[in-house]
Image (cartoon, rainbow, N blue to C red; front, top):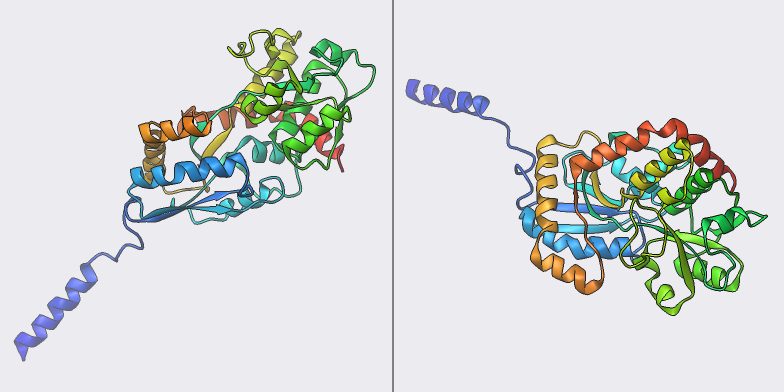
Length: 335
């Protein structure tokens, strides 16, 4: 009996001393990862995410990487969902992070997050923006916009990064702008420009490749510090702005534009998972098979690591005192 009692005590002591079973395996191996994409299933952001997901799963050694489309409120619905996600690293998001950041600075009513507290994990692509006018328009340069004698009519597809960037551009280059809402996507906005109902908009060359090839659009400005090889005749924003304040605004605009297709995680995300995800996103974007598939689909890749993206977000938010009045005025103009 004594021996049985001692044995039972030993078992109990061992059970008390043993560590609790972990709620998940350490790291991503064998796990299911969910990527919130705050866009509909037909757009390029979703196509990028679905193209990358199986390669990310391979490099993470995850059981699966699933895409969860959560469109609504100009990406704010999905971004709000990430804000409230568990910080275990198994739920992240993918979008152009410039949009939620600018929406926050504009004090949009739909914002339920603090963009500075998200964890930025790595950028997938950066497509420099250009300002386009219709090919039959009298607008051939920014000088023509300034001398229009009326506001530049901009067909807005929603309060996305291009909407806010156009507002900053009009402030930096000192021209008036009339924002017209209600356009459903870039094709609808392009048609408005071709018909002469609108003057122009901002987009990346890949997004309007067909309209450029058909000659329906004319690029008049590149939002970059150097001319694009495919558009050597188109001046950059830094060739156009004059005073020191406008130059600083141009630098901020370019930084914002670099915050493009990016993975990011919830606040206080597990540091070990952050380290692993940042490392693996870099490995995934260097995968020859993914690079070949992206080239075949016409999807450019331009990786930037998570730490760099975190610094760039901080730089934009640090410039908020300059940006806020411009962004708030743009948002107020469409209400």
